[in-house]
Length: 245
Image 1 (cartoon, rainbow, N blue to C red):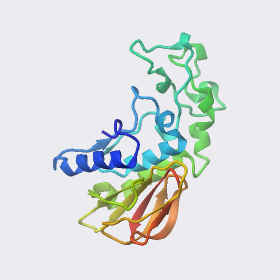
Image 2 (tube, helix red, strand yellow):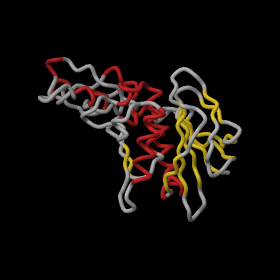
Image 3 (tube, helix red, strand yellow):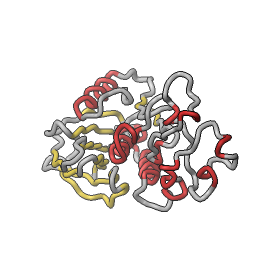
């Protein structure tokens, strides 16, 4: 569902609310942003959009799937015609090796002769290597690591149920996660507009005052205090996670 739904607030809300509200009690949910048969997330949504999609999906209930290289924000590779391997279509651009260290042969993936690799490495994405992204606290890799750590630390994200929420903007999607045992609550807000800030009110959230603990743009936050009823400001192409204070 998540892989196929249109990238806009209304389509995503309809798909997610329908799916999670009707999910069988013993079923394990999942939302997938990419796989080896689909053009890479950055190729479809751009760098910022890919980061937004990561936050949107990682805080949903169920299993978390991250396609190889998605956490680095890799783009599709321009594979020369003579190196293509896929007999069933043009799926090779999303299947090229992951860059580990751009100072090493084949960006650290293999010491083999470059011509012997099944598919070539993407030289255009060499700067997105694991080694380089580890050094930057706002890199795509740092965003994924922070999001996954929070998902393991926060009861609402770990075991909480899905809560459909409404905002006063047709460009901003909201959903909640709530853990009944601990009372831990989260709200995730996603601004789908590409070039405009949004100030949005969450009309039916189960708490009012919260702290922003993660941003797709700036990664971890120092619990910036927000009032969900008064309005929360998001940058264009930004997703944020708010924890009940």
